[in-house]
Image 1: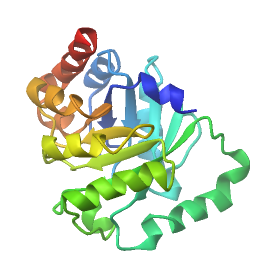
Image 2: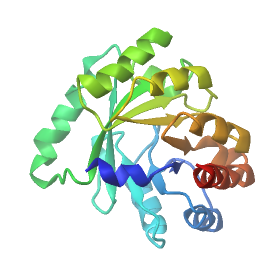
Image 3: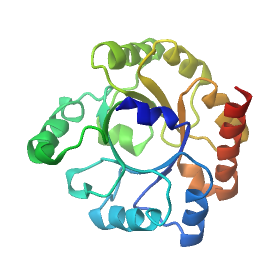
Image 4: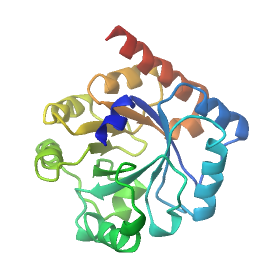
Length: 233
């Protein structure tokens, strides 16, 4: 199952609650990115998810739904990412919502398409941080969460989520040193080539989201930055 993730190095993340033109969406899908994630925190509706899905499906790029609520789950995606927020103070975000989803959907779930992410939200000002009642971990907490993701829960992905703020490359490096089988995803604040390369130096996959809406041309250039690194390696 995890082998299909190994092909991912760069992913764009689109928020169903934000507007993007057909022209820009087509350009993103044809940019050479390895996949498109559809996901967000606020105002994620089934209509919004279906709208993006139908537009992305005009292209061959893999399409992933990162599940943020039960109401917006729909068939038609190549993969489904299920977050477990490891630094939430509420068991709800670690296990209870996932338990509810399993009860409702287990008979139709294809585990070749589904990946559970050990999420660590590292921006205390982010909506997702407050929404999930998370607590801000220090560096040793984060590396311990990463270790748990691999050795306790055997998760395919550990996701360092800075939600629009650029994170600490040194911490990303420390986290990567904890992981052998679990892949490290990094998302947050990547706005240019330099930042894309700096985080990709340690993360297996970088996620570019906010800059799609703030500086589209620079966001596009992150694809080439990552592909050039892969060629050099």
